[in-house]
Length: 109
Length: 119
Image: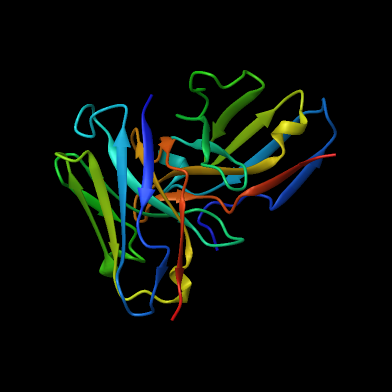
């Protein structure tokens, strides 16, 4: 059971917008920055969002992040077939160290 | 461009010690204010942080693994290493090394290496 809660799966058609939620507590999300990762099987996870909403160089602005209280959200607009992947949220927990959500498998229909 | 590469045995016997090394290229492991972490993913499951080391040598470990984990750094070789003792089948996973900007912002990752615990 992961410390951060994400929906196990989501699906949407190409061109649509999806939002993936990540719920935590005051010991983690509530008092720390959130990051988001895209993970394709057999490859290294890729940092999509850090410090709640910032994008590393090279990450398109179709990806966005936000945080409110003890929850965070990853938004993906203009869905593409290449966006089909597992998405993880992550943050620091005061008692546990770095923690991740259980992951959301995004299917592009 | 920073690159990380894990190396080590792909098969470890139960009760023995798992040992992996991460070699960093494209930059000095001791430059900048970075932590260097180990993260694993069992098949069909999510990511689990194992622990991290700062270039000064200070470490933080996942409390659930702390009694079995040692992470060390060799700045002369631009490497950091993981030792996990008394392994069981539950430790079978893909192990990743990653650079941590701060508090779990992992910006560079290795490709991962599968370690199977089996007799």
